[in-house]
Length: 89
Image 1 (cartoon, rainbow, N blue to C red):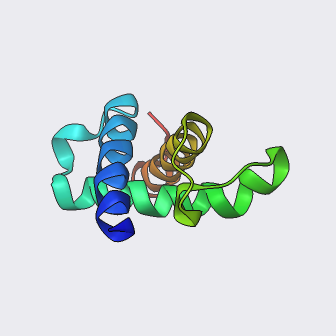
Image 2: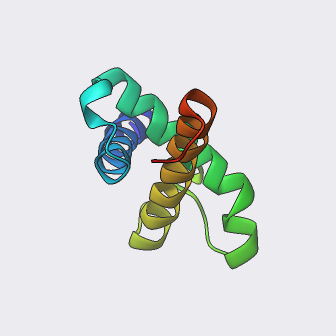
């Protein structure tokens, strides 16, 4: 059950992050899920130890963990855009 919740929340986080970074037209549902989950991992390892709390990868599903995962997904998309195009956009 946790895997299904992680996929759904990861997909929503990836979709919102792609809307923020204006890459939604280039991504499909699968890539949104991947961006959301990898962004949550990135945030879990880098951001969460700095400010405290838990990530959605640990099973914590609250506003703080979702916002932290969203920030991680936006950072991930910014890095991908920088590598692809040479600019964040």
